[in-house]
Length: 169
Image 1 (cartoon, helix red, strand yellow):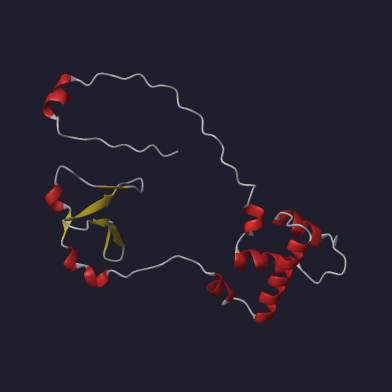
Image 2 (tube, one colour; image 1 turned 45 degrees about the vertical axis):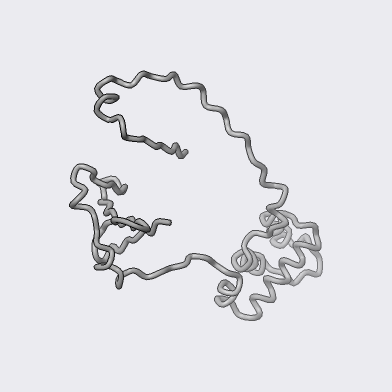
């Protein structure tokens, strides 16, 4: 695949490194987007070897073990008790569970709001709460867009250009 490199300390650009071939430098616009100037491609290619020592791999994956490292043993035990109690009473939503705890609707419970919040931060949302509640909403079908004929000037001068467009909304 492609590698994406950005080091704003060196230069405010995004460099796309191809597996076999040149690298492309994308420059910033005024509105925060980045662009590749196709009119002057020689100004925007990069020698990857010159920046290799400045590239560092990063991973933004969070694990439960990493999350637990921010809490004391007592806080982790409280989070575990909160999850266990949430399971015992049938997996109410976290918001409802917090309401039960806040208004003392569960008798003889040592679980506090902090325990519930810490369980959410350590373990993330409970999978039992997500299963079956997240359903796919059928997207609306876009109305048919009438096709337009391509002007002859463009058709004659640009026969070998392919245009690929992704619509994101």
